[in-house]
Image (tube, rainbow, N blue to C red):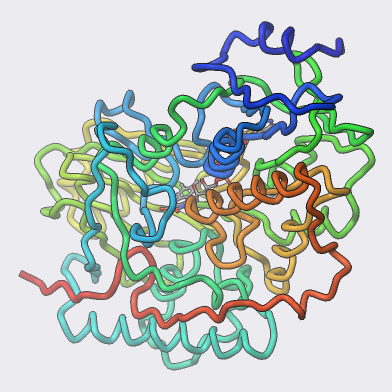
Length: 477
Ligand SMILES: Cc1cc2nc3c(=O)[nH]c(=O)nc-3n(C[C@H](O)[C@H](O)[C@H](O)COP(=O)(O)OP(=O)(O)OC[C@H]3O[C@@H](n4cnc5c(N)ncnc54)[C@H](O)[C@@H]3O)c2cc1C
C-alpha cells in the first residue's frame, strides 16, 4: 500500500465533497493531519464540526458513498422521505442535532403524544389502555429498582402482575425502544436512559436533517479504514492510501469493531474488545409500505401497538408525515430472525400481520414496499447499541482514549443517551473536545484514576410511556 502525502491523498479521492478541511497549520506537525475521523455518521459529523470550528487540520473518512450512517433518509424509493434508520428525534429541545440553521429548508414538528393499541380487529378501549400504560409503569419501576442493586437482565426484574399485557410491555420496553429483548438488555443501561418525554419528526427526514448539519464539511466518501496502526502517529490505512494523523476518532459501530472491521496494531486491550461485545447493537428494521387510500384509517404519524400473545409482534407508524407511507417496525430477536430471511419474508410478514389486525383488504392496498436490513449492512451490522446484562460499565471503558491517540465515539459511548442519534452526536463532540485539549497539551485523567472521584449527575426518570411517545390515551372513535 503506497503511503500518500496529504496532498496526494486528497487528490486520489474522487469523492471529496465541498472545500478541503484545512484549519490553521500547526507549527511542528509531523503528521498529514491533526485528526483523522473514521465514520461520517452523527458522531463523526459532530466531531468534524468541532475540529473545523477550532481550525484544526482534520480528515473525515467514510466507508459508504454517503454521510449519515444509521441516520439516512431515502427519497428515491417512494418519492417521499423514508428514514431508513433513525426517525424519532428524542428530546428535541435539548437534542444537539435538532439545532437548525435558518434557510436550510428543514422543518421539525412535534410527534403526536399518543399511542393506540389494536386488540384483534378493534382498538383497545380507554380502560384497557389505562391498564396497558399502568403495566408499562410497573415494569419500568421494577427494572429501575432492580438496577439499583445489580446490573442484571431487565427481564428478571419484571413484576408478575402484567397479566395479558406482559408480551406487549416486553416488546415496547425492549425491542421497540432499544432493539433488544428484555432478556438481553442491561437493567442499569435501561434505568439510566432519560425519560423520552417529547419527540419530534423532521418533514425532510431525520437523515435529511443530519445531512444538512454536515453541509460544507469535507468528507472522503467510499474510503473505508482497513487498519489503524499506532506508532509515532496514528496511521489509518484505506484502499486509497494511508493517512497519518496525530490522533484518531473512531466512530464506527461496536458490531463493526467486534467483527474485526478495522485491524488495530498493536491489538486493542482485551477490556476494550470485550466492551464492543457488551455494547453490541440490537436489531431494528422498518418495513415500509405505501398504502393506497389510507386503509388503516390512521392519522398522520399515529403509533399503533398490538396486544399480542407473544413478543412476535410489531408496531405501526402510520401515514408518516402525512404521506401514504406506513412503517411496520420489527425489532429484537424476532425482528432479527425475520430480517435474516430477507426482504420478501419481511414484506409478507407485514402484510399478514396487518391483515390480522385490520382485515384482508389491507394487503390489496399495498402499492410499493421496501424493508431495511441493518444487520446485513457491512458498515453497521445492527441498529442501535444497547448493553447486555452486566455490560453498562463498558460504556466508560470505550470513553477512555487509547494511548492518548485513539478516541472511540458513537452511540455506544454515551452513558445515558446511548443508542440514539443525539447520544452519538454528543459523544463525537466530546471526543473532539478531548482531542483538542490533548493537542493543546492538556492531559486527561487516566483510565486508572479512580472514577469515584468524578461525580455523576443523577438521572431523573419516571417514564409513563413505553418509548417514542408519552402516554396520552387515544380513545376509540
Ligand atoms: C432502524 C433504526 C431505527 C433507529 N431509530 C432511532 C430513532 O428513532 N431515534 C434515534 O435517536 N436513534 C435511532 N436509531 C439509532 C441511531 O440511528 C444510531 O444510534 C446513530 O445513528 C448512530 O450514530 P453513530 O455516528 O454512532 O454511528 P453510525 O451512524 O453507524 O456512523 C458510523 C459511520 O462509520 C461508517 N463506517 C463503518 N465502517 C467504516 C470503516 N471501516 N471506515 C470508515 N467508515 C466506516 C459507517 O458507514 C457510518 O457512516 C435507529 C437506528 C436504526 C438502524
